[in-house]
Image (cartoon, rainbow, N blue to C red):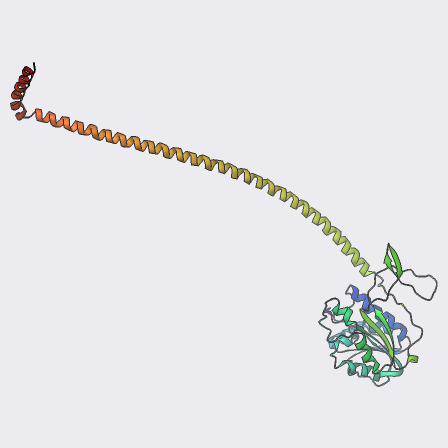
Length: 367
């Protein structure tokens, strides 16, 4: 026998092996359905991967799983071979089953995947294939709680319903209903070792406890039939489910461990950041000291430039005076040279005797 092809989890159908709340929600419904499937002919409408049909087949006379996706049906046939279990590719709005051929129709998380116009057709088909005293066990997400309050939109849900809308659809074919509210719940369990009837639910904290109020349904699970007599009387008021490996608790513990690791890592990062901050502050102080030193050097440079300019101006003034004195001396020298040249000429020697006579005459007259 060939191994079944692996299915990829897209969110449209639950696949065994996927962890999280989805395990509790989906498997719990089938565990709850087994009490109504015992010894009966069962239709699992939109059976998906097939695990739920196989759980029901453990207690039912026969189970037929129907799904629209051919690859999913092929996987189910290979994964869950059983004498009293068959998988059929078909639409839940056009079932390939004779009228009144089953005693229980199980339809979990199906109706919201259909357009509003097709939802009455699906319920009409369920009513058609059910025996007169047969029952329907259907679940549907409670739109106000599932989507609106959380601001969440499931891309695979075409038309979700609230309680009143689901009740109106069921009332067309099923006059008797019994409603259950399902949501994932975390708490503590006390279970009697001896058989006991009844259940009690508490809520609160260290400051006080009180009987638990009715919780809002994330999903409605409805047991429906044509008559009240067809609905079994012996039903639990409370049904609890936990996987044997306690995967959610293990996941929470893993998250806590990871949170501790990340907290320690954050502490290390903060300490490193403190060291970096101190180093940066030290560099800033060095920079401030350098800026002050640069300021002092710039001031000294300005003083030096002013002094240099003063000395340059004085030097220029001295140079100008020296040049002027040089010019005066040069003119005097030039004059002396002209006198010397004149006295060395012939005319000078001719005129010289007369000059001496005039000088002597002036001296004699001055006596």
